[in-house]
Image (cartoon, rainbow, N blue to C red):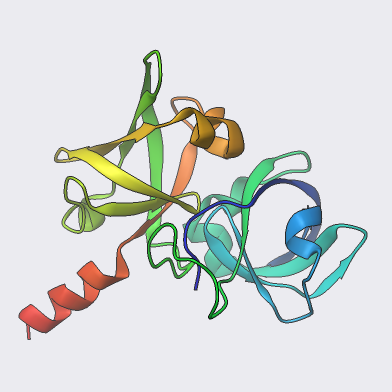
Length: 195
């Protein structure tokens, strides 16, 4: 489990094609400082398992399903990524409950800068829109954000300078694909009331 509070901007170092999977090497000195084999690290919101780690980098095996259903399939060496270690029982829950299980992808539609924040509009797949509400939570590339507004096919978030400076949303442009994870509590509530 994660909180959606990005700890570090990392960089994709290498991708090794394994046929039906890819072995990804990611540079992230902070998140690897106490990492062990088998630990979970969220990469742009995707929960990945550390296979090996050394010298500030780690490797993770990414199966075809993940490559096909997330933005990880478009990674190349040099791609900047959001990184977060899994929570521990003593970790503050600064964002919201994030599983690292991407529900789908969206696309940055527009960016509207202001003096002290920026509004970013992101498309949402029709099957995920029902889980979004104004002032609710959404995870975008592993970042816990508050939804400002929801339309039939998109939502907006308001980004403060800290988020713009410390995450990939600071440089994503219209047309860029992002990973989306909706609030897991909303999915459980839906299941309980539709039974």
